[in-house]
Length: 83
Image (tube, rainbow, N blue to C red; front, side, top):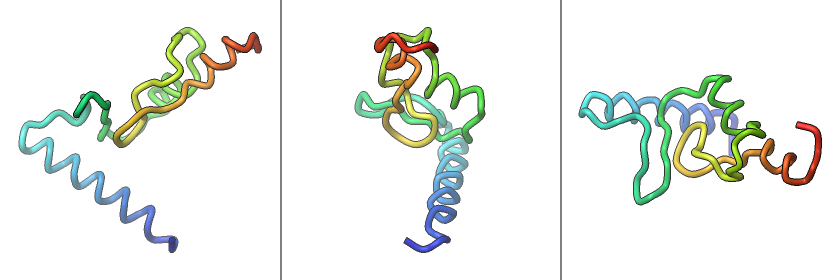
C-alpha cells in the first residue's frame, strides 16, 4: 500500500458522508445490525469508545466506519487492572 492510499480512503469516506447527508441519510446509525459512523472522529468519541471502564461492553460502536471498536477500559476492569 502506498502512502496516498489511506488519504484516498479517508477522502472517499468524507465524500460519502457528504452525499448521504444531502440525501437525508443519517451519518451514524446501524445497517444490518452493525453500527456505522461517518462523522469525523473526535477525541471525546475516541475515548468513550476505546477506554471507558464504566461501560461493561467490550465491543462498542466504531469510532469511524462500519463495525465495532474494542473497549480496552472494560477489559482492564474485568482483569482487575487499575482503570
